[in-house]
Image 1 (cartoon, rainbow, N blue to C red):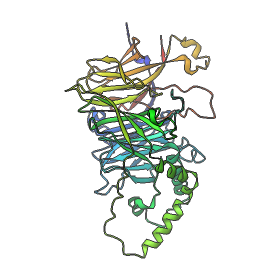
Image 2: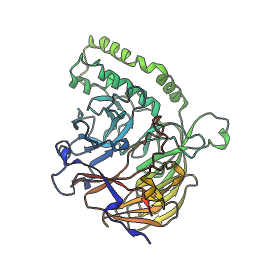
Image 3: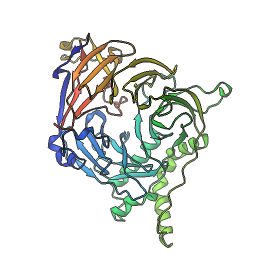
Image 4: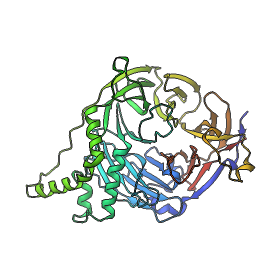
Amino acid sequence: MARRGHHHHLAEVALLASASEDLAAVGAGEREGWLDDPAVLPSLAPRARALAVASAARSVLAVVPVAGVGGGVTVRPALGPDDGRISALEWVPLVGEDAEEAGGEGVAVAVGTDAGWLLFYSLAGDLLHKQSIYPSKILKLNFRERKENAWEDSGSDELSVVFPGVIARFDGADLQNMLQKSLHEVKSHLWKDKSEQEDAEEDSSFGRIPFQIWNVSKFSSCADAAIVGLMPPPLLELQSSQRHYCAITVGEDAVVSAYRLSEDRSRSIVGAILSRGVAATFSTISSLSKIIWRSEPSPTKKSRPKPQSFAKTSPLTCLKDSPRKGERLTLSPSGTLAAITDSLGRILLLDTHALVAVRLWKGYRDASCLFVEMLLNKDKASSSLHTEYTKSDYCLCLAIHAPRKGIIEIWQMRTGARLLTIPCPKGSRILQPSTRFMSSPFSSLYSPLEVYLFNGDSGQLSVLNRHIG
């Protein structure tokens, strides 16, 4: 029997009411339950050092420090009529020599628009990069670390960009190389020869980060999707060195669909060359081209870059269960499990390797799910003596936030019991940092997957206590 939890299962991390000026720009405090609005997009930085909240309706981004170091920043992206409005938000780590400069934590905020543009901002609110991906609404941005993947070759870190029926993938190294370079240029004031406004609008001044893009709409126009990891090649291509990924999509006509995504080798090779040195000359090339083009009569309107052609996709399977519609999808750290919410208030737990349903919960309308690692029956007293827990001490669980019931439930994976039920105030969202910096050279401690609760009305940010029992 699950124990009815009390407040001691949540530990306060910060009270963000003091940052209300920045949060007010995205609608905080205007009415009770402002955070329930689906057009309000919150995202938590690695180690919960900062909170980013975007308002799709106002196209405004607020970044608020959680640790109270420095002030917040409000960014109003210079989006033209063809650039669309903010529709997705995610934090991307910047690993490398400039990491310390990026606000001490080495991160950038990625913003997607409903016209298919991707913009990256520093913690100071400087535009680091702008690129057209695909002319459609960006539904979701998801940065994933691949450090502890269960697949033998777990691949590299990645940013996936989800559109209705389309998914794109940026390799983490390509992305970080470009963003670090841009951050360095911003810090060195190399862009000050033009007005900032002109710079923000002229995306041609940025290099192009290579990416792969696939059409995943054969079974259904997806509402959400994820790349779950690498998969073996088809039988007839066993000798191929080409990489193949497995993608899961959820949507209207098929609750769950799975696809094999094949890399376009020509783009991978170009990407590899760019990330290994040519990227360093991008700024020189782009500034030279600007000098050359400046003498020409400038066109009244820049044409948008032509969309990149799709790489090969092979449909694997789909589950149709009309009138049920898949709505949201969240992956476990290794990518081997996916929790899928649907339009009828059910939650499906999917084994992404076998592509079979492992478990089904009913009666959870409007629920959101996040995987979390908990310490089961570990003595809390010993934790005060700085016990160092390893990955094997934690057990994987699923946190289900059921706003209509006003609770968060913790269920043990895969088929374990409900371990905890925690009362949850209205107007709250469960959040999770996109990355844990698991490869940090400064610490041998295992960094478990944690879940945070942000109460929009009180401004309280809390973390779920990892001890149960």
